[in-house]
Amino acid sequence: MMKAVGALVLSGALLAVPAPAIAESAPGAVLRVLVAVKDGATREARLTCNPAGGDHRSPRKACALLRRVGGEPARLDVHADAACTREYRPAAVVVTGRWRGRPVSFGRMYSNMCLLKAAGGAVFSP
Image 1: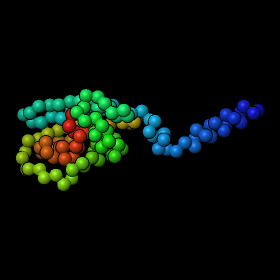
Image 2: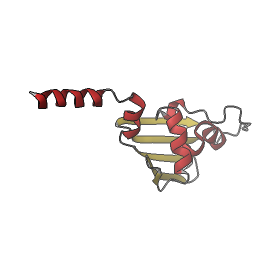
Image 3: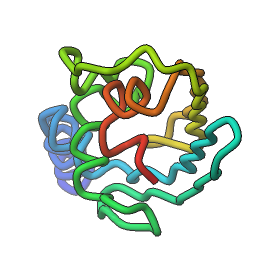
Image 4: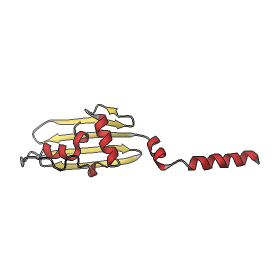
C-alpha cells in the first residue's frame, strides 16, 4: 500500500511542473526554408532550433525570431518600418517542417526581396 501512495505523489509532482518548463523540453524545430526570386537565384536551407543549427546562414537569429512568434512564420514582421522601393521583382518564401511537434506550412509572395527580408528577417535569409 505504501508503494502505491509513493507513486501517486510522484505522479502529482510530475503534473505540478510549470508549463514553460514542459515547453522548453519539447522537441525542437526542423524547418526547410526556400526563397526564390523571379529571374534570380533560388536558395534553400535546413533550419533546426533547440539547438540552433542546420545549413541556414543565421540559425540562432532565425530561431530567436521564430520563438517570439510561437513558430508561426505568418506572424513575423521584423522590420515593419523598412524603407523599401516599389521595384517589382517578385520574391517568394516557403517554410515547411515541424515546430515543437506541430506542422508548419507557410508560403507567401512579396513584391521584392526588400519586403521579404523586412517581413521575415533572418528566418527568410537561408
